[in-house]
Image 1: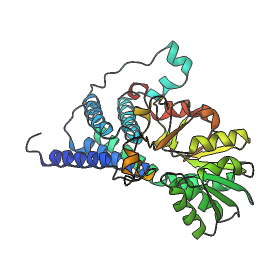
Image 2: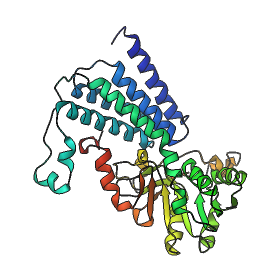
Image 3: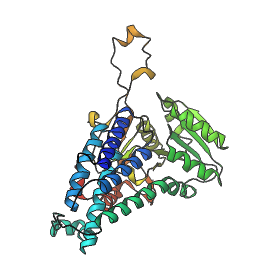
Image 4: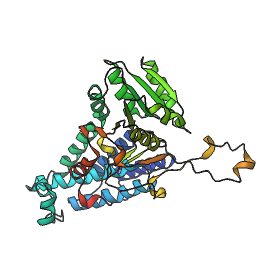
Length: 350
């Protein structure tokens, strides 16, 4: 509203975050997710609304703006959907209903259908209830990487050889946690053209973990020696597939050929209800400057070729053995159930 200082400050924060998303100045999915939740909490507390319906319209409107700033950052949309589910749950709780009862089984959904509710009642206590639930979710985010790392000893055993690619902070903390009590070797594929694997290898070696860096082309040759592959991912798709760092698909294929299990460390905030595959590159992928592949100083050659430099690979669910999230381990086939617990069906398309 004009003249409202809080709302103008909120608008400025949203615009600043959108600029950071466009310029990719917010490193890591966790930071993007946390900042998105912080902004949505401010939207709930500082905008003017009367009913849950009004609030959901506002959250969706601001959410669409954030998603449009950087469509490849799927965690932004995930956090918006989580907040919308929170609003629905708190509304139902305050009204004395239990929406979860309507979602107990697929059979019930198909036969009975979910009772329609327009969320138009003005309920006392809805705002503090929603803000408290968002605070709880932010606390869950903060502890998600630690909860995954705590499970490391269940999956990494003494004298094993582990392979990974690039640098995932979640995988890094997972391996460091296991190294406190187990001795094992890590083979790191460097993950060209960004070579983040070299950073991971350096960090692991500093903690006393025996580490070997290999080129991406050597993955297949080394896979026969490997006990298990542990990778991170940018997004877990609705079908259990991965949108992971470039080179992940090659590692997963090599692992399948040699019957090596592929374990994916991913917090639940990375779970998306979207079905995006590599055939839809404009929506699925992000392309960056080819400077890392072919320097612009090679002017004559650069002008004659087209060099796409994608950031992500699509890894189909049949190549993944196990997901380790902050609530435990699950097979890719269980993703549909997690989706029903995290997101409301009406919010899958924002």
